[in-house]
Length: 259
Image 1 (cartoon, helix red, strand yellow):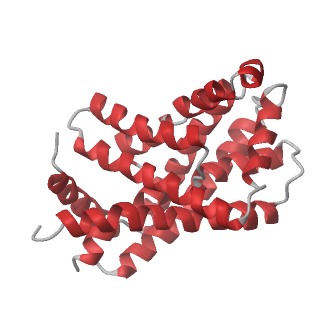
Image 2 (cartoon, rainbow, N blue to C red):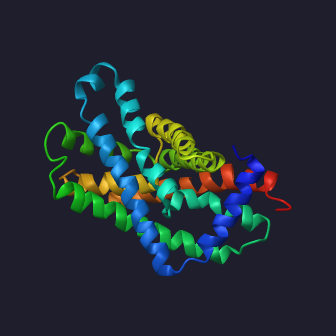
């Protein structure tokens, strides 16, 4: 297993590479990451959302099933390689605070990746899920609506705080994945924190780029404005704080010097 200091060294090199990607490469990898996260969301809806009987008697089990199946998205991002906005919230911070990379590289990457993730997630929501009618029948459509309505029903502050919790755990999952030296170890290391944040009901902006647009396509009483204002903006800001303040900053400060 790689030590925390070795993980920061890996993070530093990856961030330098990411900062040197062309715009086209960044956008393509970001599209793929958005699609991978969406596939995880679809699997979670089929497995977790397909158990209304269990949900009525034991809602904790249903939430666990939802959480247990969702992590395939981040596993794909890390193992096969793609650009995910939330993971990148922490990647660049050690180099930034240790003056090995400028803020321009961070902002360029975050901006391009966010757009690419959105396009990839919405593509899977509309083309791969909605047009194929995978979730058009009961109980799946009911689950799609319920998830999206729940995500757009909180105050700005609650969604923001849930966004912090989500990306704190997502970035720790990525960190743990880099600590592991084999594929099996990476899968387990990523699965545990991601399963936890989904089961606990935190807010991941990129996942929500799939869940809520899908509900809109499936006829939920939610507008695009409601999605963006009530969920996407506060979840995104919370994700940034979770990745930067609770993962990238402390570990970059503690283990990133003299690399």
